[in-house]
Amino acid sequence: MKKHILVIPGDGIGPEVTAWGKAVLEQIASQYGHEFTYDEALMGHAGIEATGNPLPDETLEKAKASDAILFGAIGHIKYDNDPSAKVRPEQGLLKIRKELGLYANLRPIMLFDELLDASSLKPAVLRGTDILFFRELTGDVYFGEKSRSEDRNTASDLMIYHRYEVERIAHKAYQAAQARSKRLCSVDKANVLESSRLWREVVQEIAKQYPDVETEHMFIDNAAMQLVKNPKKFDVVLTANLFGDILTDEASQIAGSMGMLASASVGDGTGFFEPIHGSAHDIAGQDKANPLASILSVALMLEISFGLKDEAKRITTAIDHVLKAGYRTGDIADTLTQPDKILGTKAMGEMVLQFLSKPALT
Ligand code: IPM
Ligand code: MG
Figure 1 (cartoon, rainbow, N blue to C red):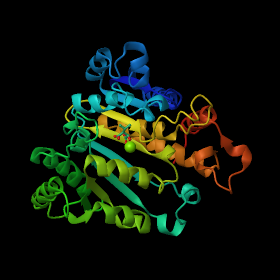
Figure 2: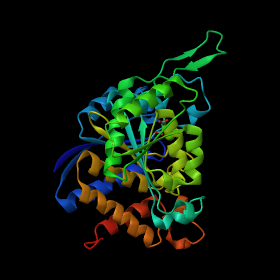
Figure 3: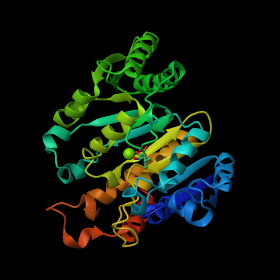
Figure 4: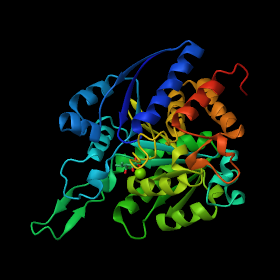
């Protein structure tokens, strides 16, 4: 298979983890006889530094011309404590989501048994958890009108949804639920918000087209609580942009660390694959970041954008073996980890490549 992949390393730890995602793509290509070509582009703080624009035009052009995009992370501490900054790294990510029509963000909460002790939650609560979040990605307060009064003392962000926006992501989530355990939980705040009442109304209508899927509606506050109380009760979770942003960070703790979670943003065109973690400037350039989320993002790319299920499975199996052999990055190490098995970014990346190349990997 021939594919052209755009790599956008981004900011902070983005470049160091993305390098390993790309290395895994290269290895898979040579093992399975695929021909992947690559290009690279700037976004976020890196884009601002080079061009003044968090999403340079050239990046957008390259993105549109590619078959899939592997992205690292975005953000810079410089802006976090400067609310007055007009140009911000995150604008690059939001703009590319909008421009590419990436309205559905899939965030699987995949649990490796070996990491049960790395979570702050009890292993008995976690065991068997397997959740797939569908976070809406191009609507909500993220893109609603923003305003600030002239005296600067009042501000607002419009929480807005259109029927079609809810419909199209609901269909995607229901189709996924049909292929999984046929349970879907839609999360909203319909007891307070009008946009959530529209959300619920539309999901109720779409549900009728999927009678084999059992639907539950839950308020966001309750969902946030249930997620740590009994994560196993969830399978497919469908929710809006802001609620999904918050719930998936919470859910990352089920998987042991933010460093383990990958995500796929899809819509009508090119798919966009990225770890859910941020730029983590505090550890950038120190060979401490966990590259597994980027590598798992590559597995999602192979499966979702290219339909290469075996190749994707091989990557998750290789990671499973690496973890079973006791290797950990600092963020997923626990008291049982042997100190000499705590690896840096590079050593962990190399370890995955080594296991990937084993002929018998089951
Ligand atoms: C995410 C991130 C982004 C978001 C930020 C960096 C704009 O937190 O992808 O979850 O809020 O969507
Ligand atoms: Mg987030």
